[in-house]
Length: 354
Image (cartoon, rainbow, N blue to C red; front, side, top):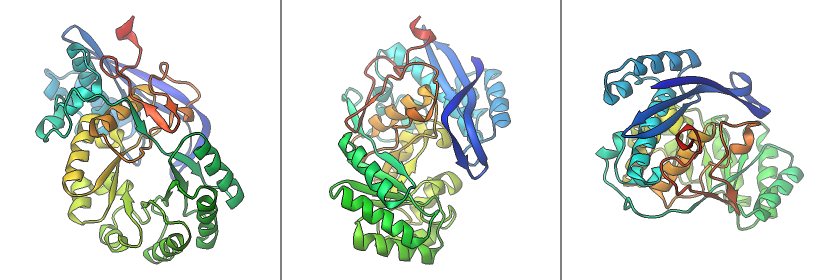
């Protein structure tokens, strides 16, 4: 196992709760299995995953392990590290089998997926997936313009960031977005910014003017009972809650209509597919998104979504957040849909193709 530190500059600085981020730092993991090379990516994001130092330590333990199972066990508690190791193994195995990664995952060929009931045939071809456009946080007029641009580009779902402004200001922005695009699936993401009372007032106002497709993480992550109480005002999607308390707790609390699954935070695309299947059995729809990852992890997330297809629009159109990437992007977005690579393994051109 070879571990290489990497850093990718962002196209624009990103403000987070932990400060301004200007690059995505992490590691590439390369393995050789059965005559094939697999590459995995770890881009830790504190608050979602372990720290950069803890990720490196976990990868060092994995590199010293005597077997693949021991290498994965060495990464427990470090989801970004496990993501990289499990992806490298799965990429190599899918390449050795001569199939795209999503077909390997759909067939139960990797990690925790093997424990789940297969929901799609491993030879089923998935060529494109719907993705949402993120139009961010802006004044009503700018928001409306961005929504119109997204719809003109073929997107059928858009996501607005809410919660940083007053409820009246957010209601005006959401109403402007709906007026700009009467038929688009309109999602709002509060990133846990609201109190239960704020959320009730906001969702009632949005329902009256915009009929939102779902409200993502309206309350703080641990507030499962309060999220459950909001269901019925609008469909509720939980994101940070899944990382903070786990999918099983979210499902047990009946707290969500939709769960947002981030492979880097869950510990791998194999666990993402397994989690999506568990959610579906509980009557909850999965959506797959990224954490502003490089091309290896981002493309792997596309394969995880393809293994779960059909899905609502996913948050996979994030490649333009980077100023530079590890390799050319094999999964471009066209007409509001992302292309699913059909070559062997993950489909990213790299050292295995030299």
